[in-house]
Amino acid sequence: MINTFSANNQVGVVSTFSELINTDFKGEMNALCWYRNLNGDFKEIVAKLSLKENITEVFPEDLMALQLSESGNIAREIILNDLQLLTDFGASPSLNLLKCYERDEEFDFISTDVYSFHVDRSPIATDTFLCTYHGAASDIIPNSQAEQKILIPEIRERLKELYDGPSEEFEFFLKENYFDLHYQIKEGVEPINLGVMHLWRLAVDHPRQKVQPCIHRAPIENEGEYRLLLIC
Image (cartoon, rainbow, N blue to C red; front, side, top):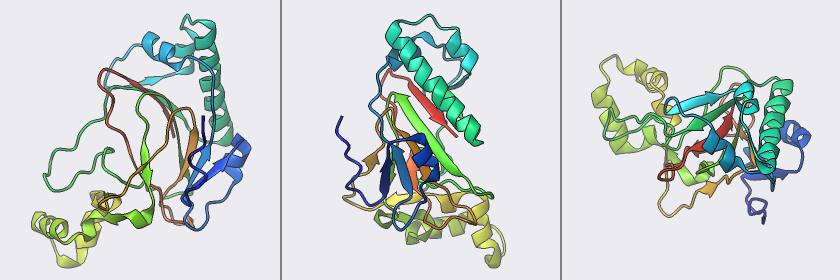
């Protein structure tokens, strides 16, 4: 598997979990990739798990209960190890079997669901970690290649029409309803796909963050295929 990320200024590529958590974001770099070419049959795990809702959390005991082939067992050990590494680091990882996320269809001029390019925000110093083991993978884009939706004149005017309150509190209204987290990709820009099996760390908007938060989106799922996603 060829590493296609190293030539991009937005992405830093590392070869160990220790490097992933200890490398500082800087400049344009607000995404770190622990690049991995893993063995193991993750598709077998997906096939043997049961989807109870559109998003079903999978716990370690669920994985351990599966009867797997040798290749499936290798995949299971990789997932369990990733969960343990992140837990030991102090994160709260969640493994999800995904059919689809809920769509935001309230407004026809702006979307605030995870399929829209957006950034994550936290009141505390943290980062987003994710790894797609199977299925469609997420996309990111450089901050210079996107525009905050609330700054696009026609969208801003529609939001002002929606808002019913004092003008000095309009910006608070945008933030309270998460409109300010969403971005419009510029014409002709090709997103960077995160691929499968790699463990990513993405910069989050928080008071101590020294770089811009990473703009990303969930992918449209492949027809008839579930995603297996670790995220925290």
